[in-house]
Length: 162
Image (cartoon, rainbow, N blue to C red; front, side):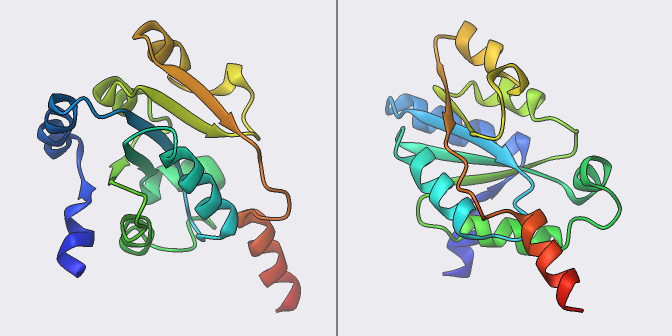
């Protein structure tokens, strides 16, 4: 079972044959991205809904260095190995791909998804790659944010009890 999980963790290079195979079978590819530091109900619900918009779900995950640049030196809380394996173990996630940059724009240009999905806490103008996806005939979806579920909230709760 662990081998199946590891097989879903790809890099930009070994993603290409996977994309070619999926496209050969006319499978609709959905892409989303994030830090996914402390996996919680909000993440799981969001990812399941994203997957329901197509046949295959690719999750772009910020590397630890990228998370630090975006969120600060106190993050990520979980290491890369943990974050990647937790995501890859979800039945509705077909591929997990790490990116080192601050944004997933390069990865989105490689994937060329049919559907780009972000959480409702992102305004359309903030969604990196939206213009590229739309230009290629895809669509961009924003899923409602589930109030009360965030890594920042969990982090604050933990700090409050120490």
